[in-house]
Image (cartoon, rainbow, N blue to C red; front, side):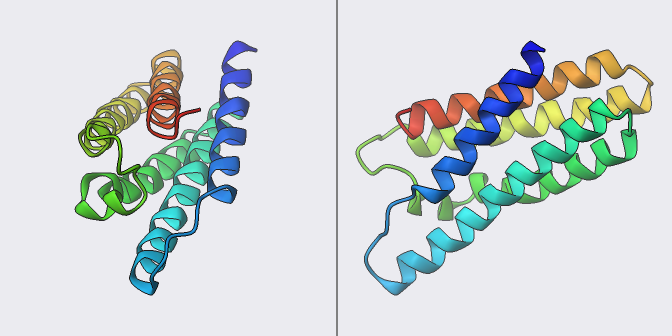
Length: 143
């Protein structure tokens, strides 16, 4: 139950952050922000797919969700992420990169656990993924 509440909270937080994003002047900024917000929505969808797969014992759905999530992590690792990060927080870029690294680590471990038939470990990895998402949004988005 606690796991479900954490997942639900993250889903609401991510959805509200996407809707509440500030407008930045300039077409170039808008293009970057739009692309990054799209990737954030895909990350949310990926996390939902992983969770749904775990709840319905569909390892294939979980793996597809992991692949979708990992496909968007390049956004957090690249220079483009600076377009959505707060300018007054000097650590934000490094923190985003560290978060992306941890998301890779836990998602890779999740696939390994699924392949080995260790669903408890895979769901623990999902919990760690969720913590990384929440941590980043709390620190960088000041929630």
